Amino acid sequence: MRRAVALSSAVVVLLGEVGLAAAQRVPPHDADARLIRVESQTIPVTLREAPGRPSGVEVICVIPQAPSRVWDVLSDYDHLEEIVPFVTESRLIRQDGDDKILHQEGRGGLGIFHRRFSVTFRVHETPLREITFEAFEGDFKHFEGFWRIEDHAEGTQVHHQVGIEPAFYMPQWVMRIVVKHMLMHGIEAVIQRCLRFP
Image (cartoon, rainbow, N blue to C red; front, side, top):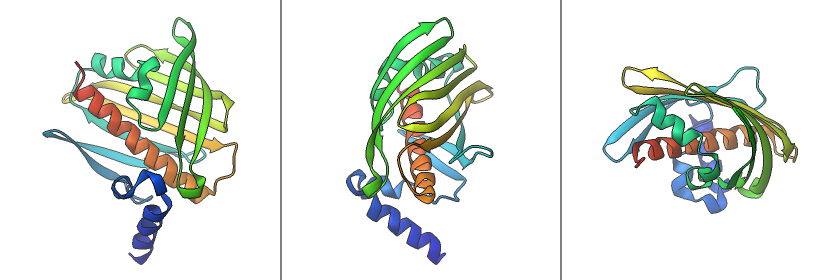
């Protein structure tokens, strides 16, 4: 218990410009559940470490919208900076059917490890089912994952997984917290966009 309190305090101190309010929304690194509230709706989200990936994390939730609506949000690559809080620029460089090249810039981290990043991905789509991505240029030795969606009785089940290893120095324990923090903020932003989609 003391370790959890100490870790939470450390996160609050280290987050710096992200602020106390954002820090309080970061689950402890061993947490496996969270509730995201959007207007009058509450969406349960499962968060856990993904086996076999460096700093790998996955989230699973059900968004009460049709798969086509969720897909439209996830595949709107040229406007992801309007959705995901840590992405400052997102642009599709090239596309060949279901294969695409996507460049992103952003900033994230904790305290002194907070920094800007740039990354270029190979993206492959299986329409209305899955988006896989893998970095081949930028500030990461390894950055890959997927968004997977499927029909669900209550809307659309979303399964998102990433594995990240930066090319710059960051302690592994900090990286774990950063990845979980970014993933939770990312899924929350996607849920909000899906529920407020015009």
